[in-house]
Image 1 (cartoon, rainbow, N blue to C red):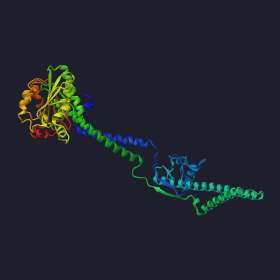
Image 2 (tube, one colour; image 1 turned 135 degrees about the horizontal axis):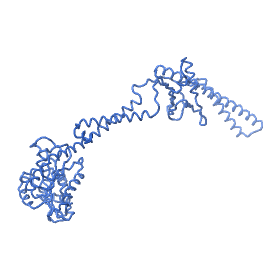
Image 3 (cartoon, rainbow, N blue to C red; image 1 turned 45 degrees about the vertical axis):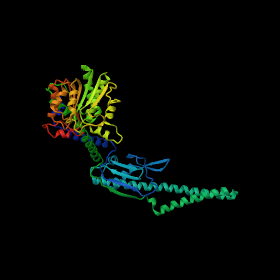
Image 4 (tube, rainbow, N blue to C red; image 1 turned 120 degrees about the vertical axis):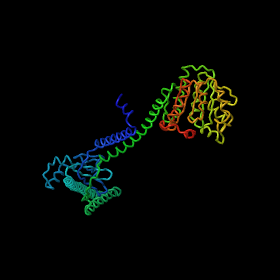
Length: 500
């Protein structure tokens, strides 16, 4: 036996679920951490943020992170000037009078530019936090000084260009007046001169108020307790924990169904009956019906039940939603094989059936049963497509307690003939001799148990009668809730299972 099989048999279910939850949490944390590390490089040193106070936002680079020395300043659509990062680092080291290798510092210096907020981040990665902070500030100040000089040179060049343009326009105007140029052309030259003069005055004014000093606010950003890697790792662990809990819950339901099925098989083993234990399929009634009817149909066809008028009998009180459906499905299967089938309902209608009847415009009981069985006229007992339905209390009138009524002995006597399938619903209040009377002529039987309500004693009792009567085929249906109980039979279970 493999290790996984040993674990499944002997390890407590609780420990298995805890193991699944922890494993998923660790996997989630690991995946999140790996994804985080595989992203941009992280720098552990102190970080300086340089916030530009100008509206123009000249210090803008393309979006993303730029390893040194690829930081750029945007001057125009046609020109990008690259900052001399190496010179800035050398200047910072010289200013601090430190005996450091500029190449090593350059490799650990990072400039980041946010194109939306116009924020420039300068960081130097060093093991010593104080040294990292000092170097970051020095490199940032050197960058600001370089930016101020570069901006001043650009604007001074622009001022020179405007001055030359103004002189040219003034010369053109003087020549135009001497040559007798039209007033329209002279007016255009005057507008150019006015615009050029306005630009030059604005630039001069800006320089006078000090905006061209490229003022920056510098502030130190203290690293958080958890870095980006650790934060993403914790988030991944949380996601993995949630997924693990979900997987454990699904596994718990699956384990419960498997254990109940295995335990049911153990209980009925040795009783002398050919027992088929059907799983709950997590409560999907159509799936349960497919499994039950498939097993019975294959057995009945294979063994060729000889009766010309096969009978599918359903018994139980108030719990018969699944029992009714299974009975009709088995009946349709037999009818489709050319058999004449009679469905006999020995129980009060289920709650679902009662709701159909209590609807203001709802049909009578006979009409509902006829429609469900595919029969047009139930009262006449005419066989349509080889299928008849008989219910005690036709026409919508049924006794409150069928078992105590006089109709049951009559029904039992009428069922003395051979029947192909008997469907028993848990909670049915048939007495042992009444159950024996039904089982003695059955070729196959289905007993429906509600997991969590049925005890092992009830399961054994359900199939022992069939075993004693040598019923060839017994199907035990396990409907959803929880596993089989190991307690003894509780008298109150009759009342609890009577709920539909």
